[in-house]
Length: 96
Length: 243
Image 1 (tube, rainbow over the protein chains, first blue to last red):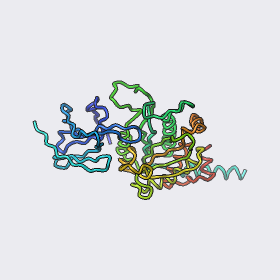
Image 2 (image 1 turned 90 degrees about the vertical axis):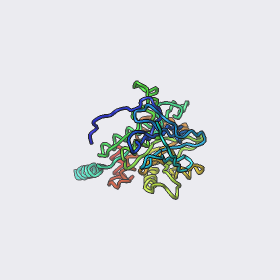
Image 3 (image 1 turned 45 degrees about the vertical axis):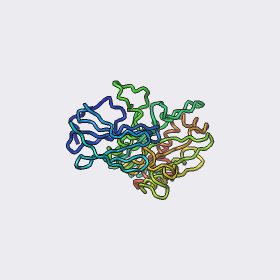
Image 4 (image 1 turned 180 degrees about the vertical axis):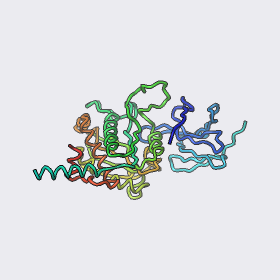
């Protein structure tokens, strides 16, 4: 394997992890998580445009820790799980 | 003369037969950077992040010497990070998701996060933790490894006994388990070698050579897990590692 190019996409986005491209390559989904060294203490799911110009917080829950998002194959929804063991699907529609 | 030749043959045989070529291991020296989630003992000046790093780097060197491919989640322990610009996280204190993400990206065959423990200042045993319940581990191989690892660490650390346990048995109210374990795509464990809040042990852990004993025990557990010869706790492997 040869790495031909590496680019730090969004250097100031602290705690953004487990990013995944959307099927059309136009968006990224990721989680912003924090921990106490033992267990996750907070995490929300975010979506951004591929160039980072726009970002949306998909979840905004203080009582739930959402993690490890995945795009659906058709790009219309995102699946992730909560630390309580729930599997959650969120339908998204991004408009201009 | 005969005795000398025989001993030489045994040594050569053991040295050549221990080989982890093709095995991919990810080492996670727990905590890092003297931050709020680090563990500090003011009586002895012990930082868990420093002790974990000594063990992890020594283990890395041993495993590389045995031919394994090795990834380490951190190789320093600086706070604040020495490299600018500051990106918000630190390379010396990765988040839990970064640590396990490195193991997944590396496609490790095995992932262990090495730690020491703390409780009430009087306990001092070895505990190795895997994801799932004790009777239903997510990766049964992780429980197998835990059963190799715990007694081997106990043997070199001055602990009272060793035990293995699933994280959901240890924390029955949890759903997923430890943040560094449950997202792992491969068998993974947390090794709590000894208790740093037991003051005699805390003093022992301030000795760099003492920390390296545990690294050698961890290396022996990998040899045992991957069915490499010469990995028993008998005299021959002891001689090899303690030479």
